[in-house]
Amino acid sequence: MSDKVVMRDLERRIYLFYTEDGLLEASVGLVIAGFAALLFFGLPMFTGILGLVPLLIWYIGKRFITEPRTGIIRPGRRIERKLKGFFLTMAILGMGILFLFLVMRTAGPLSGAQTLVMFALVLSLGISTLGLVMQESRFYVHALVVFILFTFGALLNPLVVTVDTFLLGVFLSGSAILVCGMAILFRFLKRYPVVGEGISS
Image (cartoon, rainbow, N blue to C red; front, top):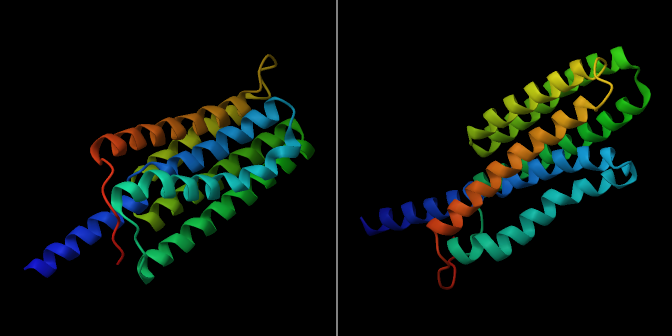
């Protein structure tokens, strides 16, 4: 009986470590919103730096926020596969953002709108894949928000001359995901105080 209790505690710690601190949302949200902000302020040369954002948030956040509350956990093979899937998905999202930047520079208004709608679908599928890999259903909601705001922004952009509605949609979707991640993080900090020395599995 005691072994089952220990295993359940380990499973709970692993689940908290990888999904319940909001760092996944923070990574995705910052990349999307940051991309829109850089283009809005005319700084496209810094878009490559966005690829480092998930890695920095993951490493720093896990080291200084999550580990003091869940303990240090060495993942098993199943969790390692999830991690590989997570970083692969983030890499695909990064390449998608680069593709989006190239499309926005070369495509005309009408063809660009159609292409950006297709990109919205691909990016949404990527975020949904991230939710599938990490077994977190809330990422399906994030994907839907991204698709809706990206699509409306792309379709309205040729009709609105006062503001770039596509960039606005990108920024709002990224900000919404970021706010969600921060809310989850604050809940995590409140619910799980810092513990003593961590355990390994």
